[in-house]
Image (tube, rainbow, N blue to C red):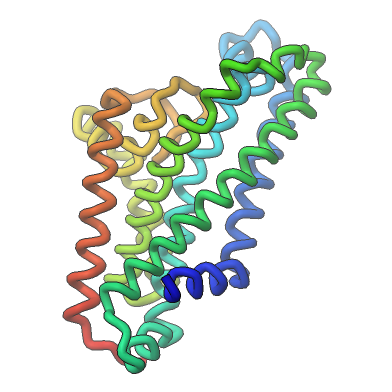
Length: 270
């Protein structure tokens, strides 16, 4: 546990944590407020009604959560890659091994710290998104009478947990890629490439895409939204929510097994 809490303290102080979370929160807020500001400009468009869902409570709670989790996957890939890459390029893994720490234990606890930070960041982003939804609703003249709907609010912890697990799985992909590359920049670049490659793969492999890591993270949330979507926008065939979570778990465990095997066999220099 000492390594785990030490990792958390280290991540809280790192600029990458604040920059990644701040950019995601800002992006979510800007998009939601922009939707509210433009909601009444073309009300007859077919997509206008769907857009207004993200500023119409109580349904906005779920829409905002889905949206934040969807685009949060890309940020999780970047964050996981940045942290894993720094363990090699900054030499912190080498120092830990030199003082007798287990390589596997060190990397697994480092990822556990990342998972906790992702959860805290997503919670903050969701709160920011709800505040932005209120602003957008006021701009658009949409009623906020459903803000205190008890049933919807009680369902949020379960949905948040499902979404968090999916985003953590996406972060594990970036963590594993950066471990293989042993570099922050290479890991981030490759992770982003994988993210968008899955987006384009839906055009050519529509029946395969539903098993890939970003698609299962989205499907695992178990809600329908026009705003979320790991790996990009657009509708695609999805696995049932519970099945998607099982596949996401397989990607998560597989990524961490890869990290452990590679780290145990790698020559640590620098």
